[in-house]
Amino acid sequence: MAAVPANDWEQPSPCAGWTARDVVRHLVEWFPEFLTAAGGPMLTPGPNVDNDPLGAWRHLDAQVQALLDNPSASAATVSHPRAGEHRLDTAIDMFFRGDVFLHTWDLSRATGQDEHLDEAMAAEMLAGMEPIAEQLAASGQYSPRVEVDPDASVQERLLAVSGRHR
Image (cartoon, rainbow, N blue to C red; front, side, top):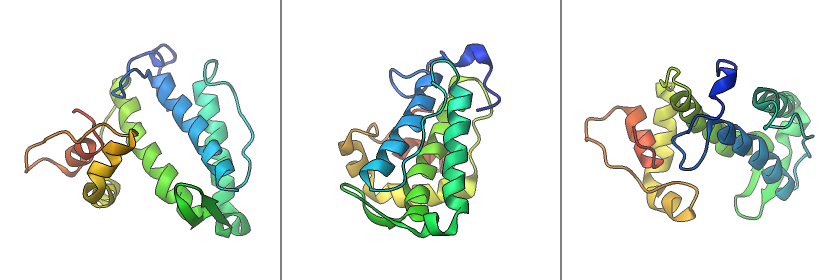
């Protein structure tokens, strides 16, 4: 995110109706709400995304990293009404890390930066998402799967299963 030029925050993202700034807003807002609903630690609000999207992201990122760096906090159990019960570090890995990873591509695409995603992580996410692609689309949080060639790269298949058009 640090590489996003200040005037690119209003560029449209691949997420329908969202700008690059809206992608950051989503990341900064949903995860603290998730933790609260799961009985987890309260995260403090940071800078306003409208005024400082990078500062807002850095503030959230630092708080999440502090949770992961704290052995007792990361081992605590959270229980989300829709996502179930997990160790906090596992919940961060399962829900937050994947969302950040996919939205990295969205931000890169919106702002004309390198769109290459880590292949190993893309393969890991693809393996988890492919079997539930219909459920993901039905949730309303993802667009329906996009068809790609059978010989498409791992990244292209991940983007497709998450409803993203290349």
